[in-house]
Every structure is written in C-alpha cells, then in structure tokens.
Image 1 (cartoon, rainbow, N blue to C red):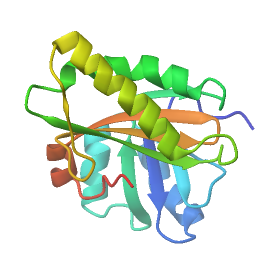
Image 2: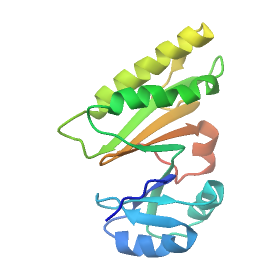
Image 3: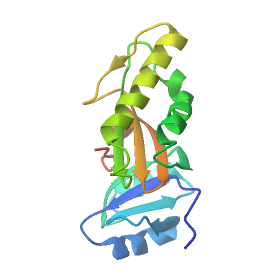
Image 4: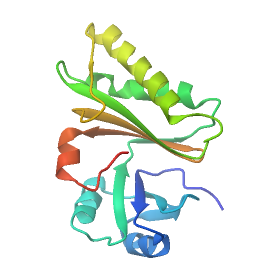
Length: 177
C-alpha cells in the first residue's frame, strides 16, 4: 500500500474505534491508517474548518488532533538533522518575552531514538538559533508555552506543528502529549 505523502493532520481516536473514526472522517478529507492503534493521518482542505468541526463533536470517535504544517519522511539516522533544518522556519515566530516549548510524540523508531533525545537536541538547537539570530536568550516553558513546536513521529513519517497558546485554548481537541 502506498503511504500518503501529503498530510496535514494527525488524528488520535478514542479506544479501538479506528474503523468508525475513518468512516466519520472520510467525507472531510483523505485519511488513512498509520499502522499504529487509534492513530490516523490525513489531509484536509481547510484545517481551521476541520478543527471547528472536531471541536463541535462532529467526529464522535475523535479524541485529539494535531495540525501539521510540515510533513516529511525520515529515518532514525537522519531525523535529528532534518528536524534541525526544518524548525528554522519558526525562528521569527518567537517574539521577545514569549515562551516556547518542544514536544515529541513518537510512534515507532522506539529502538532507534528516544523522544527525549529529539526534544533535547532539536530544542537546544532552536534555543541557540534564536539567541544567535535575535541576540536574546529565549524563554523556555515546557508546561504551558506561548508557542509550542510539536514533532509527531509516526513510523518513518514525521510532522512538525507550530501551535500557539491561543489555538490550544480555542480548540480543546488540540492536545499534545
């Protein structure tokens, strides 16, 4: 089976109802199983509209959603290098005085790389980059940052997401572990 290459959302289902979840979602985009239980990846035309629908319980078997800005394939050998390059797109999004945090949710590659290592190396690189480019030390807040960079690893697929506190407050379905 050919894997979806162009995806912009990770959907996590609620308790072994993946088939029903896929049926609920099919009219609003292209979705496929990820190979991991209750995890579906998809491509929707309008992410805001999708989040609004999810927030208003249009999809009864949906537990949470992670919108994806940048999706790509990676291996354990090149993952950190690719992520370091790709997080550079967010360098100007962290305003003076704002806090940021990194979160990695990994499904697969468990024997090859740890989520903590990815967070530490990519987050540290980003911190140093903000300091170098903007001449200021950024503030880190891992509990409730103003800006959150989420990394979703699903097998050999990886997605980056830039999520503001406002987005997390507006859409309770956006939950990053």
